[in-house]
Image (cartoon, rainbow, N blue to C red; front, side, top):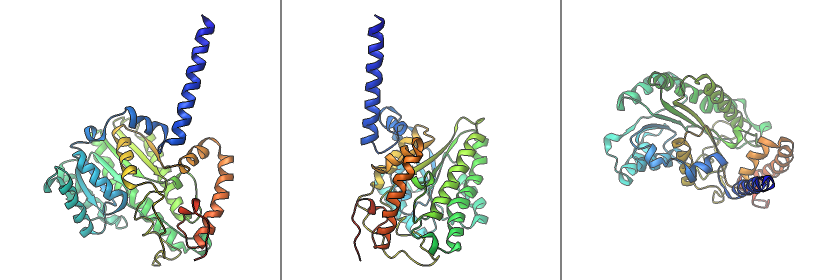
Length: 336
């Protein structure tokens, strides 16, 4: 009898490990988020009627967040610098959902103009009476080598990606602690967990976000109904590459490269909403082989350094050859 129990436990353990291994190979999110997709709450039921403020809502992940949240029935506050683009996103949200004009507020916002954040936050709160979810999505990326990059670029990245996000968070957080409920969701990156070449400043700003929100989460243990969640996407089809900083502040990126190999924005956003609906504190979202790197850095950092150095060298070589930095993992170098 005892042998039968032991055998059954061994079989169950082996089966569990096989399932976890298969999930690691075929999944495009960490195991917690993948399980939430299978057996967790649905975004369309948990997020319906909530007031969601999205920064960086004029394009990319922020724009797709607006569309999917509108279909979930969430009321929206859309913020970015370009008001005309926000109005375009608003019209599309209304066309694709049951929301009415009064359910969506267009609120132009410059993350660098931190003196305006208090007034903007008051306007956002007054519009619907409260804010249930703040999604910090605004920011810019980087494509340049450290030796060639001006310190002004590093300062701009930290002020925009880190300090601007912290400033908005500090305006909204007291409102949530007063209500003792709410969610603050911040879009970080895979390079917020592990560095990558050509993104020294961007990676630093995302590491800063990870440290800030991980620390903030521990400060809010007396508020169990306030979710602090960070999202760490790998390569995603987005405008963030087109708007990336280069070695000089006002120098545009010459070529963004082919984005087809990256995760579709719609899939990334769906996984984000599943994570929000299920209270996931940190989300790893990426296709393979990038998702493998998350686990390698978490559990086998020495091996991860070996792989990162090998692929990082290739990334720099392909960047110099004029290829997209991320597609370098899948394409051979060639001269332009």
